[in-house]
Length: 457
Image (spheres, rainbow, N blue to C red):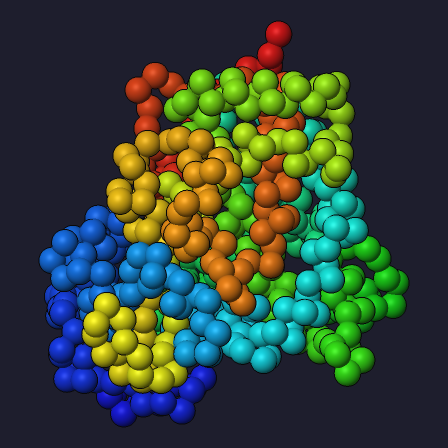
């Protein structure tokens, strides 16, 4: 991009290489920059740069020159952002603009606030209770099916299918029906395209498959909007179809389709990743699996009985273990933004128009904040330990105005899953097994995470 190019989301010139020369760092290899190092091991790539340049440096990944603002202070600066310094729209546009445009995460400032307020009605306690009923039924049934299946279950594709089915039921009020395979493939293609090295949708490329996938998904939701407005329903999609802005106007069909496209991706791809990490760490640390099983048994509910909404808060250790899994393997490892005005960070002047990012993965592994950061220890998240940490040391769901709207839904689904799984089933892996994780765009075990399920006596 030319140094005088204008971003579509802001009339601020993008600074060229010379304007960023005072910031320590390097552009990496010709053309590809540091892209392949980042894709291979994003944590190691960031740690190498920090060791050489500090918590603020410039680099080039996916053809984009970016300045890193790292650590809790960098995360807080970007996410708290009360002065509207950073554009999320312009930050995410190179990665998600063709695939999830106008999803809530990609909106800015007053427009973001307006849409967030409209969407929030679907995540209040009343709707969450109705979603939990669908989660209880779907999870309990699927775990029973898994136990009667192959001895080694590839957990990642199995939980991916389950989270898609659950999102379909909770958010749409019905299964996707005959279109389920095409929709599932389209979501997979769209997410994969977000980290494609070739950013133009040329024939045969991942970006082309992602753009076609988005078109299929948006067409599906757009066709459904008038039908949902006519018949009603308590599922999230039907509520959005009836939701009104502050002036009483209905949300447009195109906006609803874009929001549903993004919410369905977030509700099943990020949860698939986090639940896979959660189950892996419970397999690796059977002592914690036993502690969580005892907590589930302590509820005094019969095996297979639905988990009541009013008792979710009693699964405190389960929540801490899920948080620790997301600390070690966050579902979104970095967050991009674009500076609307000049600012300073770590004593360095960052010009207006600069693309910036922060690494959630790096912050979650800083040894000065998390002693022995690679070790799985849910007790890091006791109230006492959490109280003394930096507010933005832990940010798997973002923060500030862009805090994930589905945070409570994610915790609810994780607790419901753990309740039904651990109440009836022991989970393990083969001796000596360790998965290799592909961290970009959303973490997943490369081999599908083969696990073994055994019914409890």
